[in-house]
Amino acid sequence: MKKFFLTILFTPWLLAGCDSLDESVYSELTPNVLNSQNGALSLLNSAYSNASLVTLGNGGVQLYFLSAMPSGEAWNQGGNIEAQLAPLTNFTWDSNHGFFEEVWRVPYAAIRDANILLAEIPNTTLPESFKERVIAEATFIRGFSYSLLYNWFGPTPLITEETTDYFVAKASDEEYKAFIERDLLAAAEKLPVNQPEFGRASKGAALGVLAKFYLNTRQWQKAEQTSRQIIGLGTYELLDDYKKVFALDNEGNREILWALTRHPQGGAIFLNALTFPTDYPLLPNQGVYAARTHVYDDFVHSFAETDVRGTMFVTEYTNTAGQHIQLLGKNQSFPYKYEFDPNSSGPGTGNDFPIVRYSDVLLTLAEAVNELQGPQQEVIDLINSVRVRAKIEPITLAGLTQQSVRDIIYQEREWEFFAEGKRREDQIRFGNFITKAVNERNKSAKPHHVLFPIPEVELAANPNLRQNDGY
Image (cartoon, rainbow, N blue to C red):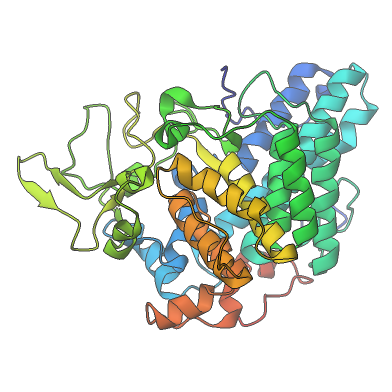
């Protein structure tokens, strides 16, 4: 499948410095640039780049680390990044943490790009079919970007193509959720089921992001309905081989609804470089940093012996000096869901980062139905479809309660989605994010830590913006 590579082609909005609010706002967009398809696509490409977090440091690894570290999925040692990851592990972060400013700024850059398109494209002389395509994709990008912000910060200022205020306050929770829903539904209505290039938004991508948003906000009925709608598309399926879902030579496969696409020579991700040690044997064109990211022995041992997912860890290796290094037994195994790219450019690799997979849709439906109706054979069948693919024993309905099914789904999600940035949101939804940190890892986690603080620089720039409670 042809892959859509995301690069930033130009900066779409440059504001001149000003001493008063009466100063004019200038833009690098010439008056007629969006009247050409190339100009419109350049801005759309910039929106995709920002929404896909390509413009974040290290290719958007924050999406993983902001989940893995506070949830206890992984831990880090070494490298310059340790100064940023240690507060996330220990719940000692504050509003000056660099990650928070980055993951606030870049989604808002995507929203800015999308808003320009949504404001200007309808007024151009471009073909109607082209305008409809751009509007649908821009609407998806905006809805997805706001869903990222909501995951990390809760409601933030809603900036649309019609916003004229300089200083916008946070929206209410209900207003914010309704806005994300409207954008993603509007996008899903117009987007094609299949795009000519993997990496561009499709109907399944919009519905997949929406289904997960409904799930994480506990809108069970809507999560059920949207999951069934995705299944009804007949486009997606579980691959027979779990490992092939993440293989570099199989990107864009039928299990992926939405992924952040990467390329080693333009928009790479540096996840393996921040995981593996400097004495790990690599090709000459591959590289790693001094940082190492480990998973705990208890998690590695939790997989059934036959579970193929449990084989996607490096538990020992022979280093470049020919020495055998034992990792399992020391809480030092490395997650290895994403293979080293043979075409790497130093530490940067072209591994796509999945956001919504079909297995997530199936488990979302199972969870929603269980919450609405309690244990049902359909719920068991959905869970078993994921378990059987992983080559572990199926479960049976007999004797299960609603709570025991919740526990099964939670555990299944840990096994299925490790290293995909989902552990934190799952723990928050299941209500054990804080208790696990306190009781199992002895961290000073407080209830307000379910949201991250709004970055200090944003508070300083916007007098109408208020910090999240507890910070």
